[in-house]
Length: 112
Image (cartoon, rainbow, N blue to C red; front, top):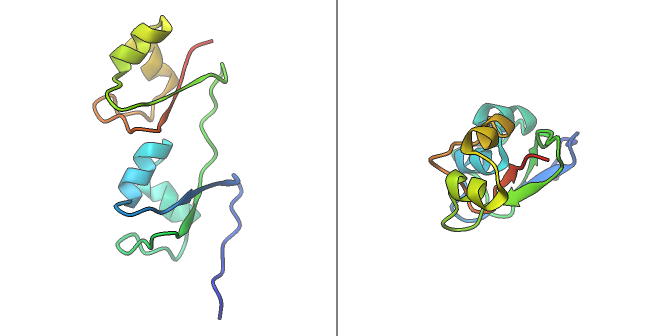
């Protein structure tokens, strides 16, 4: 029997790379481990395979449609200063973001 991929309603996918865990993928994509497990039944969270494709939930809506992609060394404070807003406003727009553990490549919704 071949591999069976459950349909992914969001059309968003993550290709597993070396070192990935469901926890890290959840952090980087603004979701939870529980949601990843729900969207990917049959995936063994303790034995992810490099190259394996996981279904992601839809991206949380960003009212402005404008994002900042986190780069090495970025903090919410530095992003707020660079974009003329406040850390409080960024947290309001990005409730899933851990301000103490930003992930390189993570998208941060900016105010309009």
